[in-house]
Image (cartoon, rainbow over all chains, first blue to last red; front, side):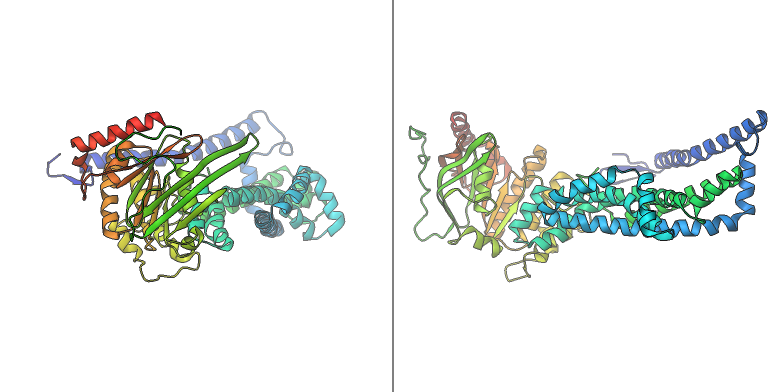
Amino acid sequence: MASDASATVSGGFVVDQAEQARFMAAKRRLLWRKRLLPVGAVILLLVLWHWAVVAFDIKPFIAPTPTAVFRVLIQRFDILMANLMPTAIEAVCGFLLGNFAAIALATAFVHNRAAEEAFFPIAVMVNTIPVVAKAPILVLLLGNGMEPKIAIAALICFFPTLVNMVRGLQDVNPQALELMRVLSASPREIFLKIRVQNSLPYLFSALKIAASTSVIGAIVGEWIGSVKGIGALIIQATYAFDTPLLYATIAVGSTFSACFFGVIGLIERHVVKWKSDRAG
Amino acid sequence: MTAAVAVSGAIPAGTAAPAKSGAAEAVRCEGVTVRFTTERGTVTALDGVSLAIHAGSFLTLLGPSGCGKSTLLRVIADLVPPSAGKVAVLGAKPEVARRNRDIGFVFQDAALLPWRTALQNVQLPFEVGGAQQRPGTRPPEELLKLVGLAGWENAYPHELSGGMRQRVSIARALVSGPKLLLMDEPFGALDEITRDRLNEELLDVWESTGTTIVFVTHSIYEAVFLSQQVLMLAARPGRVRALVPITLPSPRRLPVRETAEFVALAGLLRRELENC
């Protein structure tokens, strides 16, 4: 065993202060590299973009410079936010509605195999219809307000969550089920103590997908018929050849999507603290 | 099985082990047969197995793969219904023993719930099946101490080694104070040193709790070291081949494996196993 003054031994690990400091420094360096490299790459791309627009003398209505987009982001911030608001409400409402319905249906499927066999093929069929085809139907059914957008966002979230949730509730360690039988657990206890817990990692991977797709759903819904929202602003900016505004609108929509995704990821870290030996 | 087994101390196939008159029986099986039907046909996993295990003893089920050791354990635990024959656990139907929490089961892969800490896993038996802490049960913290995991109460299964996970699962099986502990190859996936240590500790647990243990393994050395009796099963279909009493003195420590008596018993079982 090492016995110099700076080294201590605990649980098979020899702690050498100097070596430890070197190791931690290397680890910090790698972490900063992982954070800074993407930032650097983005800056590089923006510079390249700016240079290309200027060098090839591209008209602003075809492709604006990043500085022009940035200027619009600041100058027309109030308009952008006023249009983000309805889209955000539609996306979040659709997210809640679609996922709630998917979780409820998955729960019903797990309790009733016959229901799964009857309705799962229908869910698959509905999912094969493209969003752009579903949108006009829903606008006709639900009118021009927020409702059809919420419905589209909900529909787009629904399927991945349904599939993941059914799998998470069913894909349980068979020995855990045998254990529950040895303990004479009721079906309700098996559902709450085993299946629900087991489904959480599956659920959160679906929710993270849904967080970004629900925004897409709301935007597509707004294209069909709306005067406000990110989708409406995209259409208006395109027809007005206001390309810097178009780019700024897209940037706002994407940022919102990314934040939504991040919030779900944050919740996941607080809810699922354990590592599954099954779900990937 | 046609010829009677000509091994000293072994009892011919199909015969029930003699329960000492007066000694309480933990398990009795009479003509237990289990058949599984699949698309490819019917498999007879167990064919007319009869045995008696008296209370407080340590019996090991030993046999080649496919001899139905695990199936027999699951029939006793009321996890698999027998196709024919009778099973009694502590003088009643296995279901009664299961509902009374008289049966503890230790699975091959520990079967801990990954979202629960070590302590929460040991507490699980008190949260389900309408079971409260009745007399005979022990505090979960005390059981974790018994299996050498004091200080690991708040660790999640993924933070524990294979041996530690299996210790938690033994603590969980013991927490309701079972009269019968069924163990399905619990140490099969562990390295040899860990397995040896857990074997010794299991004997300590057995002696301190006085519970009946039925242990499934395919390790001859483990069987000889742990058991008072080894029930050898033959495969396809699974049936009793011999009951071999292990006459080594108790309490046993690992060096007993180097004695001539141990080596002779292991040799005897090996020859039996090769003929299965």
